[in-house]
Length: 165
Image 1 (cartoon, one colour):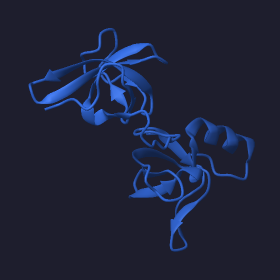
Image 2 (tube, rainbow, N blue to C red):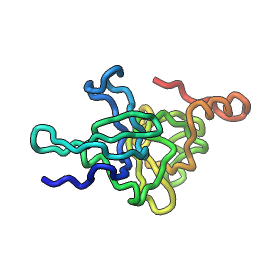
Image 3 (cartoon, helix red, strand yellow):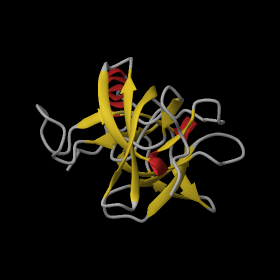
Image 4 (cartoon, rainbow, N blue to C red):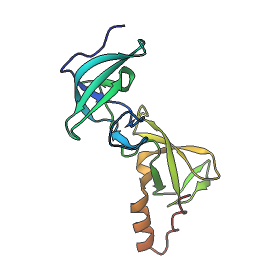
């Protein structure tokens, strides 16, 4: 088991890093580092003798966090940024449908289940809408929930977003 990164290497975190209960001063589940953030390896160690753990200093947030090797990539590796992440609440900017049948009205709120960065045209998402199947939705068809609420209130001809459960 040889480490892929060494002291001083610039790395990018490819998943959101949340507190698993080992980061002092933050509640379990708190978002520590957002996917796409970059930092520098400060130390390399192991956990349970079978996982390499890197101590990474993320300068933008001035946090030092332990990351598993599969959570990191070289800062020089290709990266496609996305507007939304897992568990984000989003609203549709237009009706969504399949074969001419509208399944989700404009302004309805859903939850991002997965980010699809390898779509050919743009980033897409698996979005779950309450009481319906999960749909693959392009980033251009989504907006932040707050923006959708403001737009719906400004235009009486658009349906208001569904309440968030």
